[in-house]
Image (tube, rainbow, N blue to C red; front, side, top):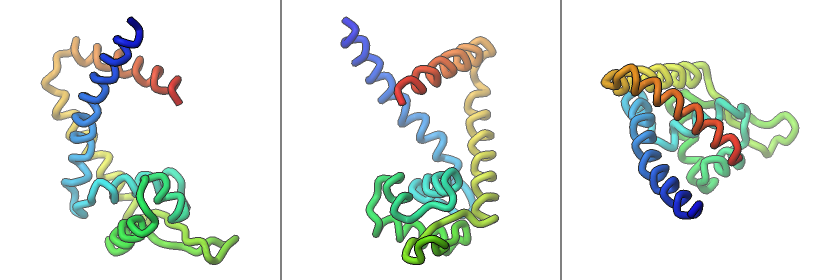
Length: 146
């Protein structure tokens, strides 16, 4: 019985994730830089773990080192990211956000908030309250799964 309900939960999660992803990534595709999803995610990873090695960045994104090099090259060309040499190991290349990269992430976050606020404006006050409650519960549950 519990396994049947878990399968229903899995199906519901698989339905909602693409919808959320589409609306959140909307903002990154509609900015002045026209960031690809991988570029946008890379910026977020670099912001959280700066400075981060190319290898760790590739591992976090789940891509090859060669593909990561192309992604970072594009971000460097847009002046959003800079490469550094590790002070401890001169063979190790690190990446960090530039000021423009930080501003771009801030701008995209504000765009996401505005876009989602506009989409959610059609909900009644009751529906908004329900969403707040259930999302808070979902966050608690997801924290248990780590």
